Length: 182
Image 1: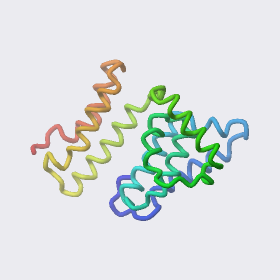
Image 2: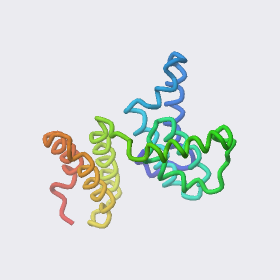
Image 3: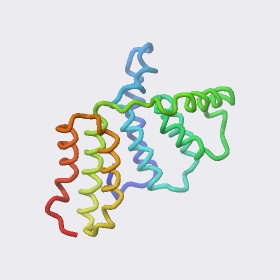
Image 4: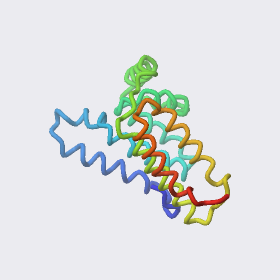
């Protein structure tokens, strides 16, 4: 996901992979697939990278919102709804289905539970982003400001996780910067 060589829809290949995995499941388990904790980070990473590379592709917020809905990531969905712009109700199965999605997002806004492994996933993503920037020769504090802020945010979000786990996750991303002097 961190490659600077990717363009177009390449980051969305991860969505195709997730869809393919879902199709191999028994029909009765396909809808619940999106609620698995290991799925959502891939969805988020794919869309975040795609939209970073293609900032004018705002129509894709419909897709991103639909996946957030399927994953029941209510907080993310509430952030995405205002980004939809002019809504293509047909994409969501009609205006009633769209309105249902919005209503559920509003009702469950603060109910999104963190996945148990999210701290490790976020740390891994931050480590990859930091390594990528270092490989590009970036070496100022400003170059790493977004990653450092995200690290602080992630650690604060998971303050109730045992201290040892937070230290390990913080170390995973911080180790790359340990000996680095700005």
